[in-house]
Length: 111
Image (cartoon, rainbow, N blue to C red; front, side, top):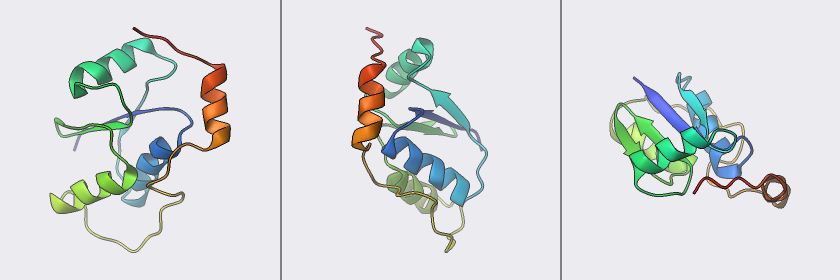
């Protein structure tokens, strides 16, 4: 299964998606949308919107999604088998104030 996750390097929502990928031992491509303008533009073009994270699973784009929602999608479509392993971080949490501060200092403007 081909999975591309359009994520910020440091973000509660992005880390929740990563935690779900780890929980189910899924191989995925972590696409950095902050440090690479082309990646961000690709995400916007594919998803039709500017919010992240976005996760593309086998050609299906899941825009502006949390780790919890990614897990629900994977389970509902039989792409993973349920397990009791706890995610390493919260899977439905916004960025912390510290993460927002890091992003504020490193403002990226693509458009």
